[in-house]
Amino acid sequence: MKLLTITLTIGLALFGLAACGGEAGNANTNMNVNGANANLTNANLTNANLSNADMSNANTESLSAVDQFLTEAAQSGLMEVELGRLAASKAQSPEVKAFGQKMVADHGKANAELKALAAKKNIKLPTEISGGMKAEAERLAKLSGAEFDREYVQMMVAAHDEDVEAFEAQADGAEDADVKAFAAKTLPVLRAHYETIQKINDNLK
Image 1: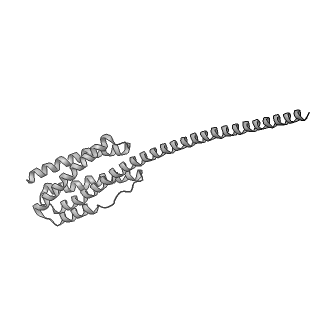
Image 2: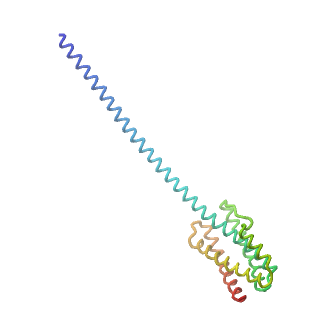
Image 3: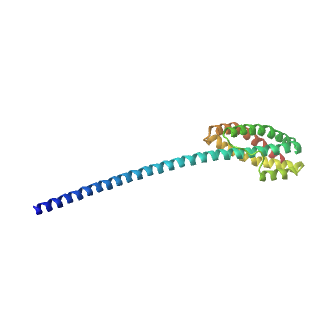
């Protein structure tokens, strides 16, 4: 009887250990599965965050491109109006004087349209020309007669060459529909200015 009791006791003890081991194994399995699921969830969240970051960067780049074009166009427009006023008052050649007056009228109108477009995009445009441009305007203001005419005309040839190139790029490839439309509308005026100032430049030589 003692031997049977000892045997039963040992058997029950071994069964209990097996049961505990099974429970521990199940617990470890559950922990591993849960950990894997958590890792997958974290990976999905990370991928989502990366996707959101990519979208955010794309929007920032797009906004920066619009901001840059409108800002540069505003600077150029302000410069051409200011120099146009100088030419209208100081130019010796009637052609140069008339061109200066046209710059004030045409670029003044374009600047107003540009300002309205920028307001729609919540973009703040410069209200005066930059330091480098201001220095050029001050230098031109000190000239007079034929020297003024030649310098002004050369500046306008270079400025409109750059303007036409910049507006052509936006009219053809701008992703923003409003910017594309503005560039396409303004481009023919800039091309006409460029052709006119080239002819004036040829006549001054």
